[in-house]
Image 1 (tube, rainbow over the protein chains, first blue to last red):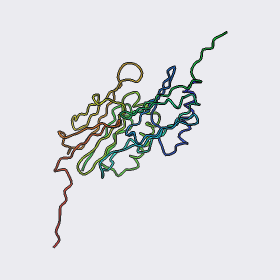
Image 2: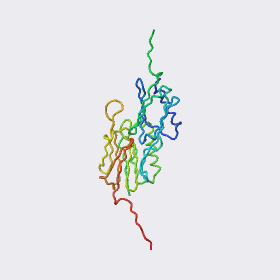
Image 3: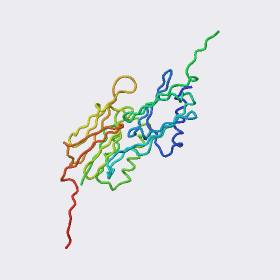
Image 4: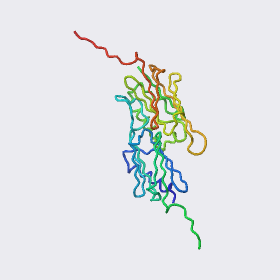
Length: 126
Length: 148
């Protein structure tokens, strides 16, 4: 089963699941052994980031740190201070012990190793 | 009186420039922002494919601040310029799929009283903050009036 097929319906559900958050822009790609997830999280420091994976669901919540001087007045806003929230279902096709995350310049890159059961298997005919 | 124009240079020309000087028609501005967020929430295709990126404007008594969301951009690939009284922000980054680069640009009109030679920019966590200091004479002055 493709990660993408399971991922898109749950991503839509995620909006009800995390009502106070907004969904960041993200991209998923797949190799033979892993899924790679790129999430745009501008304004997020490492401390404000929380990634959990349980019951076949990868959950990312991230708080933005505006880091503006005190006493500033907003004249025009196009961004939101709401935290980012993203829930992606993967039906346990991911080895949760082998998830690597890297946050740089507001971009989170996650490498999710596939569970052995999700890898293509060659069956020898005896 | 200050008047900041905010220009959008892509196909969204149906929406006129947002005037920030007259803040009275709050509702109009909010609708405009809702509309912008609406576009942003549909996956933020603009940033993914190049073109526009969201910008915030702030001020305090000494400076005007322009903040732009530019995740995943190399510092060397960001250019900030003052051209004809406008702040021009240009950035590019490698395309995620294959070769080539994706370019972004935005033009923000800035107040006249900015000290253009003292503009500073910083990039952190995917956010570019441009600090535009105000000229001394433009800062609000406190005048003490003694009443006899």
